[in-house]
Amino acid sequence: MSKKDLTGSQRTRLLRLRDAAFWRQNGKCYWCDVKMFLPTSNRHQTSPFLCTGDHILERSKGGKTTRENIVAACKLCNDTRSNPSKIQSTDFLWSEG
Ligand SMILES: [Zn+2]
Image: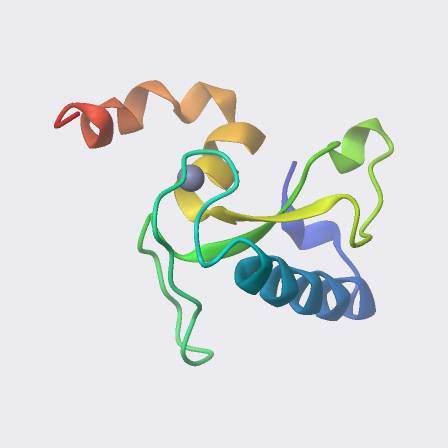
């Protein structure tokens, strides 16, 4: 599910909830426990360890953009969850174990 269909206000709320979750989780990804970093500017950042807001229950399944349903997840986990077909292309990132 693309984030592009979020309206502006939903996106703002997601970012606020993401920041709160980031601090709540001590800066670690909810799914893989990797140490993440928050975007420092509006520059386009593509690191797999960029902190993103992720819906526990996917929006396509009725998940809401609320404190209870938003966790801080690294970009890699977020992308992998929303695009399962991409898992194979990112396998190399896990190979160092
Ligand atoms: Zn992760």
